[in-house]
Length: 339
Image: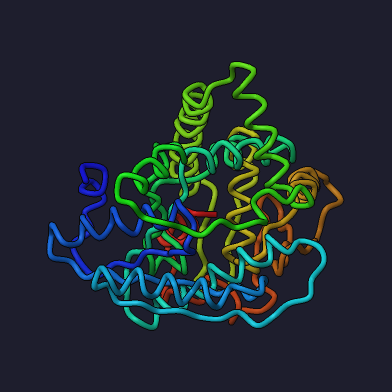
């Protein structure tokens, strides 16, 4: 209850519920919060259509939500026969559906049941992939999504899964067990097994949590540096182009250079596409070459003029630059804070 108060939720909010122990615990806890402050709670359950009994599980979640007097919404994802990246596909489609429902119902806050174990798994997955500070600092408790129209809150990040199951036990609440959680053909299942092994070897959840917290602090420091450097480096020319001052750009640290360019190409080009690290690093080195004249990346066109590089969208309608009448540095920072 105390943790929820700090998020200052004072209006209709939604909870994403799958029927598993994590989201069931969140639903019950959120219901206590909603009743205490007389706020309307909406339960959203997405049917991924990946297992035979998925529809019956959604019906069961509906009945559990109705017992609480919560408003219930569901959406069914069309069947997909993908054999690879199935979990990644399911996650992307799930969030798109959640955002769509929240937008349609004018819901401004969405809660998800990510907990400490999820954060540890996320950290290990990103570590295996060679992520930097931003990737390793993992999940945020609060972030703006869907073009800054929706607040995504993860109120359970500090709690381990065992504590959530214990809570459900105290409430005599049953839940759904997803067999894919133990299927080692999926990356996350193997990482989950790895995290359990590391914890048994003495790398406790508290130590994991401390490392992730330190990384989050470092990530916040880099974000503050970005906010300081953006007005020095960028000049906005209406909705058509952004000028990069190369001298100021190379006066910033490599991490800031990298992050600024990632934000830039997603702001000017394709916001839903994340460019590869190699491509960004190549672009940074190309800017320094005397022979460099023109390049493209992620839906952006880069053109060099003396000591500046100009960045323009290849398709203005798909660009976030198109979302403001006249652009300023603060708009860029606001619209790219979660990139």
